[in-house]
Image (cartoon, rainbow, N blue to C red; front, side):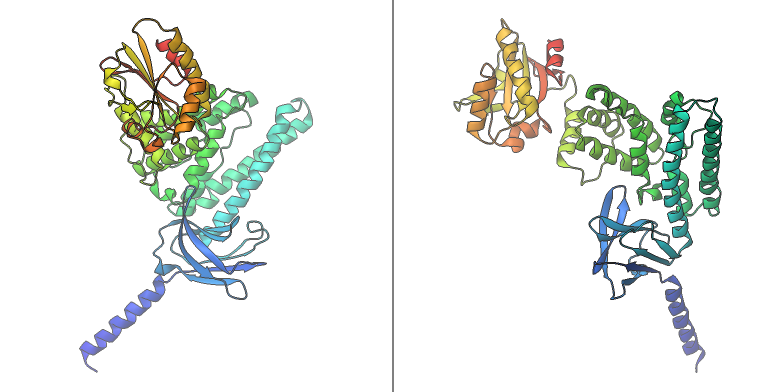
Length: 455
């Protein structure tokens, strides 16, 4: 055997051994399962992206070759069925999990993977700690302080807090650079000193609940960490007794705390901003959405995910292009008789442009009030141009007859896709702009009261 051939054989063996050493398997055993396949997803907050699927054998086992997928470090999810799943930390090492599908979390056993043993120990500890401490805090809030049971309760609370901090800050931190250690440190629940009076604890949480979150670590985006902490923090500002307007102002304070801390890392900042926008949109908190767009997205020129919903993009574009003092695009649209109305040719000192739709509940409240306001105006001061986003002429005509016949009513009956709706980046109804005779924006009233105050 020549030296050259021997060297080639040696290299082949080394390459083969290297491939074996880099192999990574994820083994799952399910008992009481009815599924035939599991579906692997990556996590980024509440967003799940399906990556692969794998079939269960007759004994409920899967041995998945993760090395072929080049999975990055983070939390992944095996979806068993619509409402059942199994999360695990991927850090490049073998993982072996076993569970009963009737109670996935409580029956779960980590056969292999030190990171996942810590991860699941933390999840179970968190759940128990939250339940127990909330009950003890409730007792301390109502029980007489001079009673011995009060002292015993306080002592037990302190013991639980000490045990919890021992786990998250010491036991879980033997390898502080590992993903699981960073996840646990940032995910830990806030621990409130029992000496802080009950009535001051909420303010303490608002000021310090985010102290342990590492906003500078972008790897934690590959998990539910930042979205979980965001939800947790927002609950401290939620007060069901407040009217919506005041509640939105409270949420704006929470947004400031969250996003100013998130600015430590651009990707984390973007990740949390997108989550806040999506969440506040779902719950209809438009004032908070506008606040985020104006003070963070536009001010810091944030580049949001291309998948961000179209109406949010319109909101951002409208805020950028329709500031006070900006000149609005001209509007030339037909009225109910088919005659074209030209915004530039309306001979009034001021024009209130209102975009509305007959099916919009708030519009049904606003337009009759604007109609009465127009009737009460004298001279050459104000006109109201009502731009309908309806698609059917009969719906538009009926609404005008019942609610706003004194206004200048126009529509191209193309809904959200009409030229004026697109030119003005309309994302919600009603939307109003008060302009002067040169078509400069004087104000952007949100309510009828805003209109009255402006005029």
